[in-house]
Length: 574
Image (tube, rainbow, N blue to C red; front, top):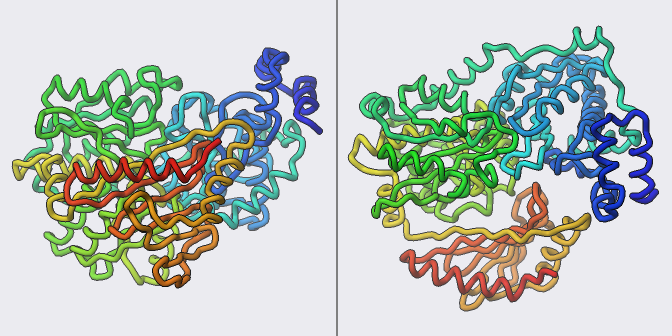
């Protein structure tokens, strides 16, 4: 059946709601739009599904949400009556229709006699992850599109361990989803099932989460000295981080000035172009407020509060938006420094980062005698390390981070946690303020100690139904045509993560990487720098990462431009 037939079937199905019928009627003469909406089904991957809000099989709507939830319900039923009773925790952020989708998911679970525990208001990813484990649930659902533009929403699934569902379990869920061919035929619950199986998440869960975070504080003395008078600006960018971030800061004694217009739960994120705190523009209102009150640090969280963006005042008095890599090395340095100063750094300490995250982490961990592990992109892989080490006690997890502004200290959650990261960043400001130092000055000291590393990534957007196929084709072409040099920079080792092998170009030796499979090519350069090319798992973008090691910033910037030009000659995008 072609996309036009599917469109007509949806439009003429009496079970389609009035909103959907009006929306689909409005595009009846737009063949390209109809093809986009009905030429494919919204892909359910290892991070769930994410798409533009609207009606169609390739869109985020109440029918695609119900179908996905029915697949999850079938999976849970295979685990037995106990798993059904343990149920699913459901949370949602401030995005358009997030609450509606959360309610729809809960009702599908109830129709399958599976308990659904739903947060009474917006709650971020880390609190959902915590609640899954704290309430001994069989799974979790988070309705969010994270930092994507306002027209997007998404559906993330978590396993019983609080981490995003494993690829193996996801594959089973996907098989069940595909069996539900009738999008409008997903069972609805009876009033009795709604009453029996849909319950609120206990209010005390929040208090327990904050209690876990307070255990992770590192500088109580500095906070006591500087916390109440601290000039620090925070913005939740209209997202779910407002209450938890301000609550934990208040509980540990740190004052933060919030950007009041951006505390509103605005599903259109009207004050920003994109609700992504990685961008300086997204933090612009916070920076303006910081300049007004004389603050030196601004930080913001994305809609589901799993990412933290930071801007700091430099030595010239201007605000710079730090990259996720820079915030990561600041937090890594701060955490390891404080643990060592307090004599609390475990002998078997371990740090985990994604392999596209800054190479500087290696030097810092080496200095502190801490083991560093690299995993594929996706915080679930960091969560897997935590789970493994809790079982075999081989290492103690100290910190995990990704260049995309994701950080985690503690094992209370198994995903990125911008709430705990906000707490640590604010505490770090206190620590350096007590020593008459700024965060920016400490960043410069780190560069002086370990050498300068310039980290950068660029994204090449792809469009259309074949976007993912086209992106993978670009990466595949790099594997079939090995590159030995980028301008004046020789390649030492090529890692092919799709085959879990790396090749030493000098010797020809081939060995295993020891990593889960993912379509990615990674070039280790002779001077300690790296280049990595991979398709994004959440957006139709090809991502290219550069980590450039040099003695000084100017040298790194010159080298980066040469490497970018060389990559442009090799990576061919139609």
